Image (cartoon, rainbow, N blue to C red; front, side, top):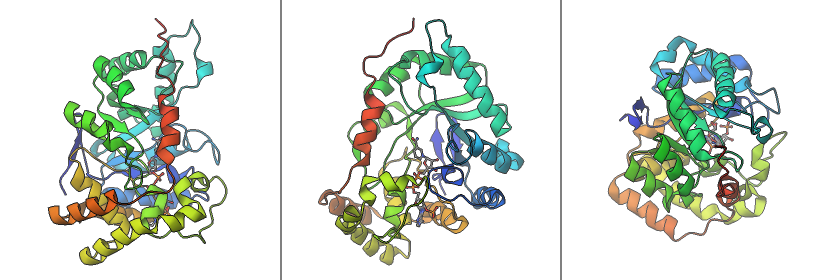
Length: 336
Ligand SMILES: NC(=O)c1ccc[n+]([C@@H]2O[C@H](COP(=O)([O-])OP(=O)(O)OC[C@H]3O[C@@H](n4cnc5c(N)ncnc54)[C@H](OP(=O)(O)O)[C@@H]3O)[C@@H](O)[C@H]2O)c1
């Protein structure tokens, strides 16, 4: 397994998205099972774990996921890269509010939840029209200088906003939606990030499970399961998107790998700066996804997947909706 870089940090080429243990995917496992799953992922070689302060807000409470991840990684905390995300509500800010104080309060709550005294990678979860991105970048720079965070990143961000932020305090990672079914990032984000030494950390890299081939029109999504709202997973789009699974099926059979593994191996082959963070509540599937770092595609295999993908229309586009959210703040109000 060849490690990859996020700024000055070194990580396994695939990380672990921990959200599903608290939030977003229906029924959550017993805590002991989730903790064991994280430990097993580490023993397998995973050194990159992703959480956020808001994960857990519906089923449990904000901070639930950070606490669970913190407990699980405690025995090997120094050996891993721990990433969490900051979410600022508009009502936390007023003309008298000092942005540093607001962010510092969030960070301290995350540190307490995680049981650590530093965060390796601290993302802004969503950009916000009420806060200047340059001001956020400045505060992140202060936190790096104070040793409270090692690197910082942005999530669901457009290239314009990324560039503004990067000019103030170098950004180490962008966490955007990216998979074989959501390729918007290929237009501007990847070229910019490759040019500026920024890593791209795709979330939902298996298209919320679709690319595993295990989601069918019979699959039921219950409770807070976000898959109810993923457009590619509507019954008609599951049927219409089968040609993508056919591409994966063929190569997966040839390589003796799973479809999910091929979808991850494809992006690892495509970009040297990509570090996907698939999520799963199953110990078995977590290890299956991580093992995709052992599935090496030849250039010929990669090219055949690329050309087949380029001929296909994807039905349902989630990124478009979420990118509007990420870019609505083009008219930044500076608080200075
Ligand atoms: N920055 C953001 O705004 C943002 C947004 C969403 C997510 N994230 C992060 O990204 C991580 C991953 O994203 P995600 O969970 O949305 O999407 P994902 O990794 O594309 O898909 C997760 C879904 O796929 C299923 N799955 C995963 N591997 C599988 C396999 N090998 N075979 C069959 N099914 C499989 C899982 O089911 P099972 O649990 O049953 O295996 C789960 O339902 C999250 O954990 C979170 O840390 C960030």
